[in-house]
Length: 201
Image 1 (spheres, rainbow, N blue to C red):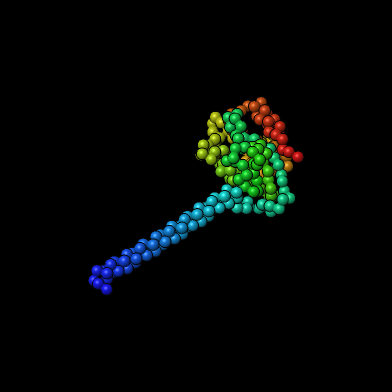
Image 2: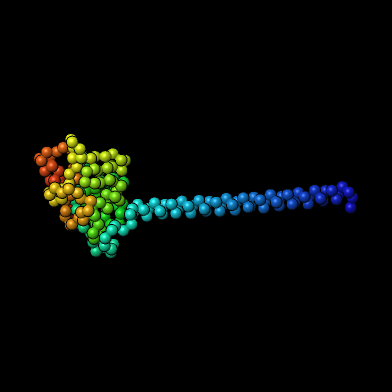
């Protein structure tokens, strides 16, 4: 074997090893890419699961609530009027945010309670609406608070009450939240409106 042939074989051998190393590096890079993709998918799935679970039951089980065993389905009409305009609970932002108490089926007039002893305060917490005896606060942080000109008022079955956060609805209740400076005639019209809500069978 001549010197030239030996040099050619050495070059071929070196070329073979280089190709093999490049292929191995390529396969490793592909494997790492696939692994990274799996990690990203798992991370996104975990985050989505967390988001969904916290939106469905925003604070876990309401304090003192009974079980979700299908035996409770209490319905009450609820109307919120801000400066004479009805607040729309029928939009997707306010639908089925808790398994315990909710608005559902694109209906923004009927509250459904699916376990015993769940308060209206828990309902509003699940909707991310701030509610105290003095203020009604939209999710975008706009406040409607009692002051010298306007007042936040609550009525349960035509009886004015100081606060409704701790109230547990009963079947066929009618609840009015009203903010503004309405006179007695205007309040009567709002009460008549909530009375007209169809709560179903």
